[in-house]
Image (tube, rainbow, N blue to C red; front, side, top):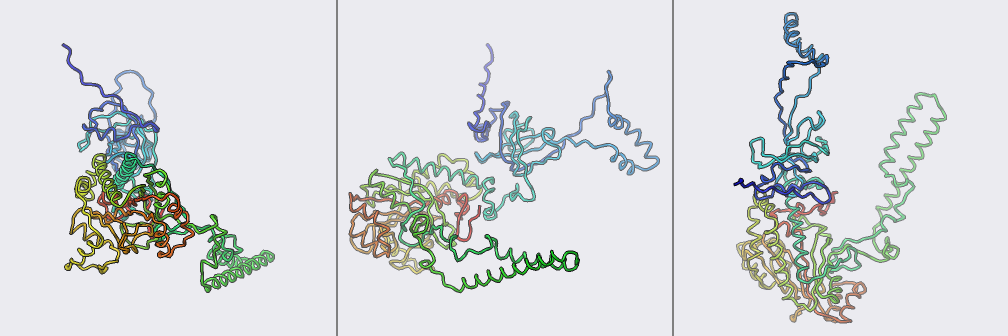
Amino acid sequence: MASEQAPVEAPLPLSKYSKRVILKTILDRPDGGVGLIGQRVVVGGWVKSSREFRKEPVAPASDVGGHKDVSCVEVLQSKLPFFKSIIKVFAGEYRIREKLDTVLPKPPQPSVSILQISDGSGVSSLQVLVDSSLAPPSLVMPTGTCVLAEGILQKPSLQGKETIELKADKIHHIGTVDQDRYPLSKKRLPLESLRDSAHFRPRTTTVASVMRIRSALTQATHTFFQENGFLYVQVPVITTTDCEGFGESFQVTTLLGKDQSSVDDTGGVKLETIKASIKEKSKQVEELKRSESNKEALAAAIQDLKKTTELVSQLEARQKEKSGKSYTQSTKVNFSEDFFSCKTYLTVSGRLHLESYASALGNVYSFGPRFHTHKSDSKKMLAEMWMVELEMAFSELEDSMECATDFLRFICKWILENCTEDLKFISKRVDKLVLDRLRSIATGPFEKISYTEAVEVLKQATERKFQTKVEWGVSLNEEHESYLTDEIYKKPLIIYDHPKQLKPFYARLNADGKTVAAFDVIVPKVGTLIRGSQNEERYNTLNTRIKESGLEKQQYEWYLDLRRHGAVKCSGFSFLFDPLVLYATGLNDVRDAVPFPRSFGKANN
C-alpha cells in the first residue's frame, strides 16, 4: 500500500491590487507559517531592524585539467605568497601589506543581510535573508528601508524565535533611507517623541496596532448601525448655526486675506525680507565706492537703497498705525461679501441636521470630524474630534440610553473577537488591563443615576478634595467623572436629567423646569464617551430655549420648521470616537490615538 502523502498547501493568495502576499496571511496562521515552507512568494514591507553577517570566503578549487583564461589580477593573487616571501626580506611585513593593498583591488567580502520586515498587516514581522549579490555592494538596508523581495519560504537558518523565513533570490525594489534624517530606529521610542513625526509613526509596532484597532472600531460602528436599520447620512462640515449653542465654534471666512488695509506694495514679501535686503544693498554700495570703476552703477545702487529704506519706513509706520487701532469684527468684516454671504462655522455637532433626516427616514447616523475651540490641555480632547452621531424618530430618552448601551457593548465585543493579536500585543506593551476593561463593557452591567444623585454622592466624598467645588448646577468635569467610575461604581455609568444650562438648547425640558432629558455615558479611565438627549419637539418651548441661550433665532428658523410641520419626538446621541480608542488601547493621550491630531497650538502635517 502506498504511503499517505501530506496534503499540498495551495499557493498563497496575492493582494488583489499590489501582486504581493500580505505578511499576515503567512505569520498569523496557527502553525506560524510552517505549512508554507517551500512556497515561492513576493513580499513587501519596511525594515524594522537589520543586521549583517559575513560569509566565510570559499577557497577556489584547483584547476586539475584544461586550459582556462586568467586575468592579470588572478595571476598576481596566485603568486601572492611568493611575492610576500621575497619582499618581506627587504621591506618588512607591514610595508608588504601596504604595497599590495594599493596594487590589488580587494573584492567585497560576501555577506547576508538579515532583515525583519513588516507591511503593517499585523504585529509580527517576517525575517528575510538577502545575499549581498542581490543588492549593490555599497547599499545598506537600515530601519525604514522599503523592500519588495521574492524568494522561497524556508525553516529559519539561524537560531531565534522565528518559525519561518524568506530566502530572497530576487529584489524588485529598494526604497533607501537617509539615516541622518530618519526619526525612527530599531529601539523603542516614547510615544510623545513621535508626535512631531506623525507621518512616520505608523511604522512603529505600537502605533500600527493602535491604528488597526481604530480601523476595527470604525468597521464595528458601521456594522452595528447597518444591522439595526439605520441609514448613513453625511452632514455638512461647514454650517451656519452653532449647533450646541455654547459659542465654541471655529469661524470660516475668506475675508481676512482680502482686508485692503493689510495689502502693501511689496507683492506679498515680508517686511523682514525687505530689511535683510537693505543690508545686502548697503554692502553693494560700499563695494562700488571702493572700486570707483562705475559711477553710473554706484548712483543706481544708492538710489535703489534709498527707495528700499523709504519703503521699510512706510511699512513700519503702517503697521504701527494698525496696531494702535482696536480691531472689531463688525467694522472690519462684512460677511455679505464673504464666500457664503453670511457667517459660517466648522460644525460642532451634526445632530440638528440629522434630526431633519430622521423626521423623514426614521433612524439615521453619521460619522465624521467635529470641531471645538477648547483651549485646553486635556489629554482626552482635541480641536478636531471624530464623532458618531445618530437620531431616531418616535424615540424618547430611555430608547436613546438603551441604544447607547447596546452600541458600546457591540463594538467592544467586536474588537475582542477581531483584534486578538493586536490586543495581546497592547496588553503586553501598553496596558495589561485592556482586555478586562473591554470585557466589562461587553458583558458587564451599567449603573444609571440622575445628575442630582451624582452630586449627592460627590458631596459625601469628604475624604476627597476636588479642585472644582461640587454643587448642584456645576458641570461635572474629569476629576468628578473619574472618582465616580473608577472609585465608587467601578463600572460604566449613565448620568441623566442634567441642569438645562449645562446642555444644548434643543434638549427636552423636563416637568421641573430646571433639568432636561439629557444623559452622559461615562466609563472608567477615559470619562465621558457619549452625550445624548431627547430633543424638544414643542415649538413654543424650543423657541423660548433659543432666546434664553442668547442665540440668533433667524439662524434656527429651518430647525423650528421641523416643529411647525409634522413634529415628531426624536432622541439621539453623540459618541466621542477618539476617547474610545484610548479605552481600547490603554493609551493615556488622545494625540497618540489619532492619525494626525489637531490640538490647541499644534497642527503638524
